Image 1 (cartoon, rainbow, N blue to C red):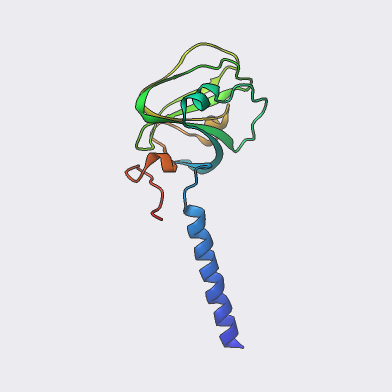
Image 2 (cartoon, rainbow, N blue to C red):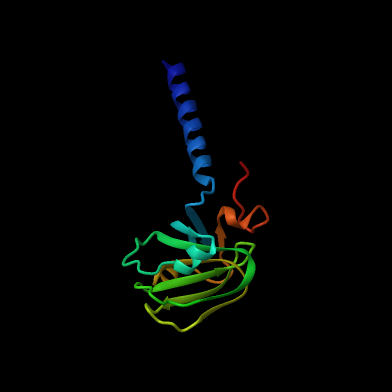
Length: 160
């Protein structure tokens, strides 16, 4: 009887370790954000080509609180955005190639065509619902984890 109990514990522990390791794997459909405030995970849609980046979140009428869009460029560059045909207010998080948050623009106004300047050296931009940045306390210097940032990122994806 004791032997069966020991095997149950061993198998249960093995399952937990395996499940935890699987959860740690990066996915194209998810981005993790970490800072002094803790950690958050967002389900994302990718915009990684010119057409997808041009469309962005235009005409989206609502978005779940844990959802966002990750715009990824081929190389770091000067990034600018606007809110043309964007119906929901957004927070924009501008990220360097190392996965570190460089700049943030909060509460972008729907339909506003004013240019939002994210600065130089931007590899990716995460757009989330307005208020999310303030709710979590996301700030410049926080880090993101996603396969787009590669193995040299500050918070790199685990090796396969």
